[in-house]
Amino acid sequence: MKKISLVWILLFLAFLLGDQMKPWTERIKTLSPEEKHVIVDKGTEMPFSGEYVSTTQEGIYTCKVCGQPLYVSKDKFNSHCGWPSFDDAIPGAVKEQTDDDGRRTEIVCAKCGAHLGHVFRGEGFTPKNTRHCVNSISLQFEAKKDNFDKVLQKAYFAGGCFWGVEYYLEKLNGVKEVTSGYMGGAIEAPTYEQVSAGQTGHLEAVEVVYDPKIITYEALAKTFFEIHDPTQIDGQGPDIGEQYRSAVFVGNQKEREVIENLIGLLEKKGFKVATKVLDIKPFYKAEAYHQNYYQQKEKTPYCHGYVKRFD
Image (cartoon, rainbow, N blue to C red):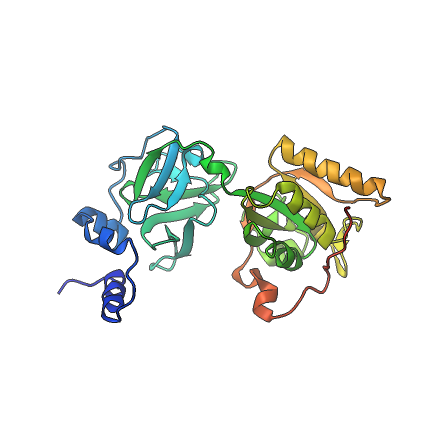
């Protein structure tokens, strides 16, 4: 008897229970045997056989099952591995989980769970040091849509313990996701123990995914300066150490000008701002137990609080 995949079992149970079927359920039924092998049964297409291995045209790569936008062409690069490679995904579009082999990290569509491939880090192909190795057969390509990759953007802040910074920033309207992690150091994929020991030069930082149509970068930055003490040097509250320094990692000149302008406003008010303005470096997601820490513990921050500093 053929092994029935977990996906099909869940779909069958949903039907029996009278659950409202997802719009992509019918799409799964139309997949070819080759597509089902990869997308449903988590197989892998032959290297250098896929349609999008060498494509360079500008556009968006979407999920073949549900149509969810997954990758933009600017993040695609040639890794010579035989499969399409991307060093980043559209924020929130891809979910990472431990592969069945217990060693690799599988990537699936965050919307419908379709298998995409695997993600690898530390290979040094691009400055982001990440490779999403994706099966072409899991994707559909759409020609460039103006400003699509600007719908959601990312910002990076370090203001002491990342638990507290995450706690306040994720409450803002327009913020889609806040992730605690490490940025600014000299080694790849540091652990919390290494960062805490001051061995890596990393700061505890957060990655903020936000919708600029709802909240501006300046509004995010203002809140950042009001939820921690930007005048404290090498620490925040009782947390002392270089990993707790105040800093903003900027990705372009416009962001730098926004931060420098806000620092100037604070200095005019008499604040001796210690916050550093640094160029973006690779961001490494912290261990799972650090994510949404205060929400998990049902507590509030002990070293962060809101203090209005701007008019």
